[in-house]
Length: 286
Length: 328
Image 1 (cartoon, rainbow over the protein chains, first blue to last red):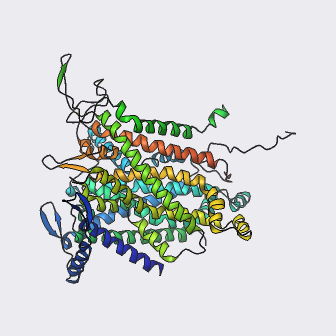
Image 2 (cartoon, rainbow over the protein chains, first blue to last red):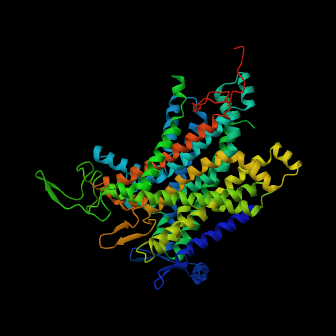
Image 3 (tube, rainbow over the protein chains, first blue to last red):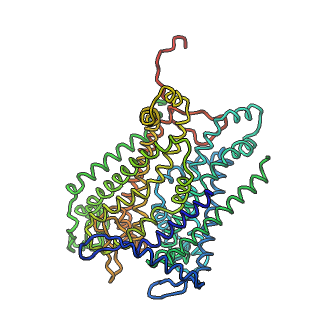
């Protein structure tokens, strides 16, 4: 029931968002902002018509008008692979540094670094990484990024890294706090007094108790990654779903783009849950 | 030495930096060496040509250099910083006041209606800057509306759309406290809901709400920065299609970053770095302030871990000494 309501809310929100550009306009006579609600009904009507006719409609890119259905598959795959790789590495790095390797001396150093980085807003980090990539090219001649959509791997891997930065910092901070809290619990003391090794305690006691928090924050992690993906695809000219969203103000492509994003994030959320489940089954006794 | 290490440096640095920023926001235009419409004229000084774009630290008159048209970057950021700070703090005040008020009361409900939770989850899924982008994109670029109307509009919408997340986190905290036994005692003694909220729950949350307030300022600045990368500047964007130039009307710092973004690929990258570094300093000073306060409050309630963790807080808890120990 709750999930149904949630889906309904998201659905309404997306429709509303896609319609906003046609609702808000500037009244040239009074030089003021006016709301034109008739745009909402028309947008939704056209959208439904297109969908019922079995087509996805068109979108405008530059001066060209193209069919959404021709491009959506490739765009979807690009965005999906960037986001999947990004979120997976977020989870792996977060768990490794936060729990399993947190005893190592080098981790201590990484912790300090991540703490400093997490104070910086993500868009500044994105700009700095771009600067860094350009400087590396200037100094060494090694090409790290490419802005042409045709350049294949070069155009994909850097967005993956950038997408992962902000959610990693977020998740890591969360896990660090939880780890600290959990390690002060009495059952940890009991385990220590029974002479169990730290690794054993980390797997069997700490991880098991932190997992619910991670799952609860997973939606937030995915949504952070999506927020960054929007910016990164826009800045780096990646041929992904955002092409539908930022290139035009029409209702049709924006709605299709946002729904595709929803689908992508749902698939990713589910696959991360699956990975965590496998991990728990494989390594931790029930 | 030990005493020296236990000083909360984060807090004091944060306070000092924030004070400097507020000073600049208030007196910025009075300190500025030029107005924002003054331009550097090309001239010969000691046999060298001085002309725009002038790099930083080349001339005493233009300490941080000029942009491509000869406008002084230092004056520009001094004029812009007040917009950045005032807008972000206003939004934070509105959303924190409304969000914590509602959150405190909703936290005292026995059961939170399912639709509220569903709405919160749905809302947290969509990135906020995207919502603002759709609201501002049709009206910001080459707008005929006065830039103060646009700023007002941005403040209202940005506050409203970020209230749900504040309600959600305050609600959870307030609910956690509402379960404690002292609330039960107050209820037994006949305290009304308002009394419980303001006399029992709110005092427990004061500190975390203060920290949240400061961190939310950073969130708003981040939001403005994300919009600026999309060429939506707060207070309006001037778009010159002949050269594909986007300019910020208010010279707000995030807007300056956004409009100078293309310089990253050229030798005039400093036009981007100047506002970017300032924005970085602004966010870092607020983060330091928040972290310093957190250390200050947390050291009082700290727990001790049983296994080695790599993130022990350095500050030792300061506890009130009520009576001196006699036999030590």
